[in-house]
Amino acid sequence: MKTAIVIGTGLIGTSAALALQARGVRVYLEDHDPTQARTAEALGAGTADSPEAPVDLAIVAVPPAHVAATLAAVIGRGLARAYIDVASVKGGPRRELEALDCDLTAYLGTHPMAGKERSGPLAATADLFEGRPWVLTPAPDGDTEVLNLALELVALCRAVPVVMDPDAHDRAVALVSHTPQLVSSLVAARLRDADETAVRLCGQGIRDVTRIAASDPGLWTEILAANPGPVADVLAEVAADLEETVRSLRALQSADEERSGGGRRGIQDVLRRGNAGRERVPGKHGAAPAAYEIVAVHIGDQPGELARIFADAGRAGVNIEDVRIEHATGQQAGFIQLMVEPKAAPALADELRARGWSIRR
Image (tube, rainbow, N blue to C red; front, top):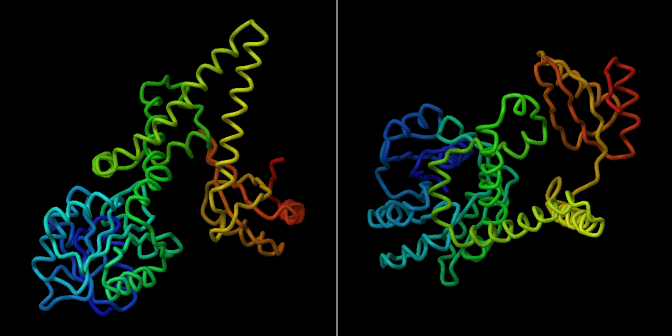
């Protein structure tokens, strides 16, 4: 691949353009909003000039509702040798393209499983896709050259290719992406009218659950409108669990010992099923999740503290497997949770104490 055009210079399109530019591909940028394309150009994602000849690959990075019309237009212009889209749903856009009687020989639907709660070109980074799954949904009669170009794109973005059926993909993202977005927003919505005294008690748990609730409502309305059936199916199952959980909690209020015991068993059941599901989430490098030990260290909110603690951990010969920062409310301090192999935790804690760090037990 020597040349590419990115149509739609939001977070995903601009990030792909930055990655391709960094690896020597000549990238052209196009957007219905010329200002956004010029912003991406200023970031070094390519040029907003039009290509003088067909490029190797056209990457359509527009909201799902506009994918089919945009692809039909660029295919009609003969803009590239191959065409892909990066929308978060796959079955609907392909059926829309078929209904438009487009020649889909040179088209392949894809979806990089990466993103942020922020949108637009200013949120883009060249490393957004590194190590992340990138779904490819080739048709049985698809062109091998198109698949090869899509695989080259995935490799240049340092992502991991995953081949799926379009409708199976849509059911999967309904479970692992679209429903979590809605559930996060539903929990965060409870905070809108909550008493200030309650909001001041927010800790790391509520921050974790509501992080993605900061996402762009307009963008997510487009995404959910393109995959409503599978998302509704998952939410119906969640709703059934919620109803059962509410009944169990009400039962715990009962003076009747048998009813209260049933409520306790119901709560334990949903929590244990949650444990089992959480254990299936892939861990580091896609492997089975490991049971890490947490060494929690008090840390000040000042320049150089993170560098110092990582350097001290390195001197202890301990590899930090994961890290999380828990901010203290109303204080210029917090705790950094260093996740390490269980056998390494005692040595790390001893080394950090010896170097003056306060360890939380």
